[in-house]
Length: 391
Image 1 (spheres, rainbow, N blue to C red):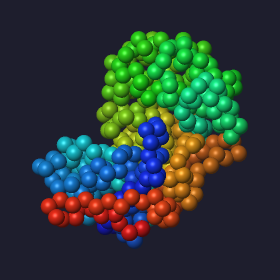
Image 2 (cartoon, one colour):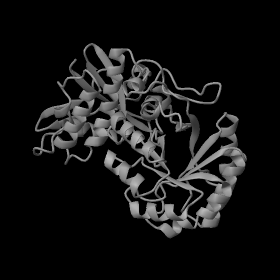
Image 3 (cartoon, rainbow, N blue to C red):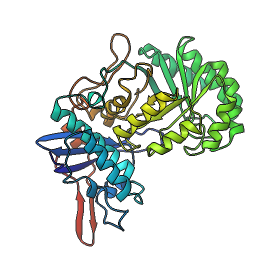
């Protein structure tokens, strides 16, 4: 079959704030071919991502992403990899290309799975979809007491693992941060899995991050996520060498396979967290899952938006029985909830898994596309390059 159409839907909450919550807007991708439709989601600012698909060519290796996709044959996984290679080369100077193609690639896997009647994880070569322990992904409270209460609420909802992120951490003293870590541990209980994400707050300052390690160790944190800028590999490696009990985690900022490999090899992370909506899609994420497994590093999905993105994020490591933790958006905005008519729910064991249904197994809600749609038109030289498509 041929890729006949690629459509983008820019969705947004009525008001977008500076809150570190990626579920406030979305760029949903619809790919059509051979009588089938697949859906994907980019994890990036919608407007420049749309522009990267349709922009005029600047030169031979700065072409719009559509040139590598529209009209191409899609009969198997090798065709998706072939198109990915085209984008990497022909759009190498178009820096938004990886984000744009991530959602398109995701939708092509969904389309291919629907056409074949198989879930994506089977197309990736896995024999089974293993259950993952979801962690409630939420922000730190403004005060330690709020942090404690958030932990109690997450445990009351059945989550054995809880990740606290961002908030006031790193903006005050190590002692103040330590109060939050202690409150988080008290909130989730002695048997809970505690994960901490500080959102790159320390830049590349190893000493500032190091000052938080004693409190993290005392609280029994499993990992410290993104203490530094995504590419500050030297800082990662230095801190990893000094942190025997609390492993480092990162990888959501990896926009290609090489960035993720380098974080493993030089940053010495114990957990590599890959976002299919950023790294180029499901195929590159699967390559990193294989790479990490061979090196004793645990693969973890990264997703903070809809259950369409959640399903896609589970596919690359669905068949890895030893990698058992998964991020699960616990308090997304209504846009992310409404985007799909069905949702992935923990089973009786408290685990979630990639669906057995064809493709990604998710149904996109047309009503949500209409409700949250932001109408966009891109014109160059009087010619319309993009206009919001019909649902």
